Length: 125
Image (tube, rainbow, N blue to C red; front, side, top):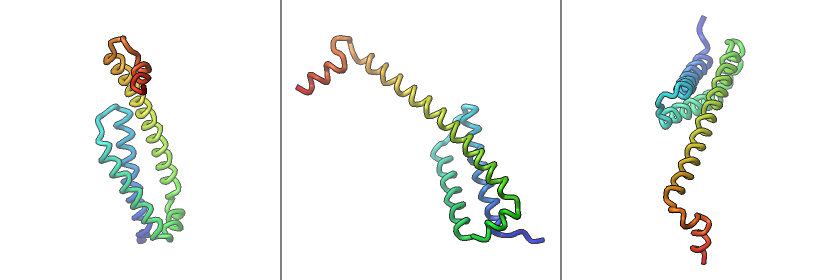
């Protein structure tokens, strides 16, 4: 029995996308260094290829239903949601650290003679 080429293409694209998302999520969860530029490039490319494949191969949808691709898409969706949650946590932490460092730098630069608000009022005069 010959596999449907459209289905094979979609499965390959999904494999690469799932692998990339899992790699990023795992690295974030384990606090390992990660090349965000490279990972974003790979995710963007995979999503672009997936979009093109779906647009150019409408028969792939019928084959997907027959080939059990619905479960794969559900697994990909769960992986993307876990990835989004992990990215949200790391972004929130980075924002908190940036705010803390900003406050500390402002306090360190001030000798206490003038507040930041006083300096702004004086500069406006």
